[in-house]
Length: 56
Image (cartoon, rainbow, N blue to C red; front, side):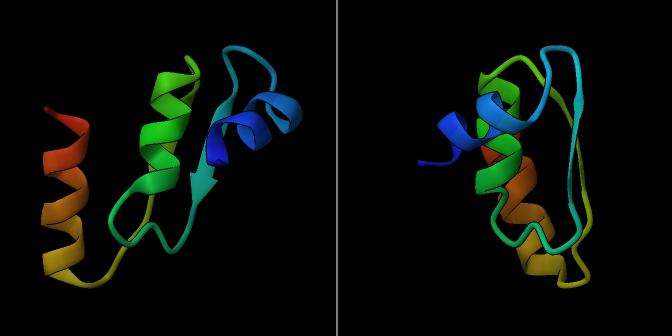
């Protein structure tokens, strides 16, 4: 669901910023779309979840 939005609004090679990244769904979609990403999250448990999703 997020990947088509990223591809429509972020140029290839662009950077996606998610200031409330939670479990990292937007970051995974950005990575799958070939975009770089910056995720910001204050909750440690959500940071760990997104890190696991991105590095698997």
